[in-house]
Length: 105
Image: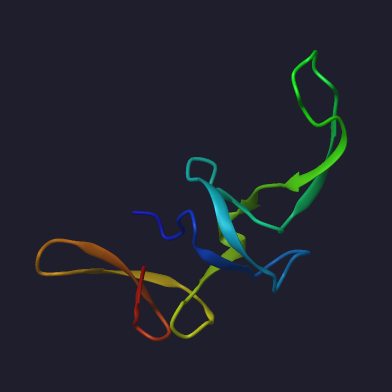
């Protein structure tokens, strides 16, 4: 079970984008990277390819951010926090906020 999942609200804790918050679009666990909406915008020079409707010219899109540079924002306390895991009696496993102890969904 990953600590960061698609749809989570995260905050950047290191780098040029430090302090900004955004929602996770894509998680790449093998590369240990995530793509966050509105964070790490990069410019890509894209050529038109045949008759296919693709956006040509200089386009802006989100680049990947390393997982070590972000922290999950707790929905209960609203602060960036580390994530722990709790195993219940029925065998299910859930993420837990280390600051307030609330279960993160």
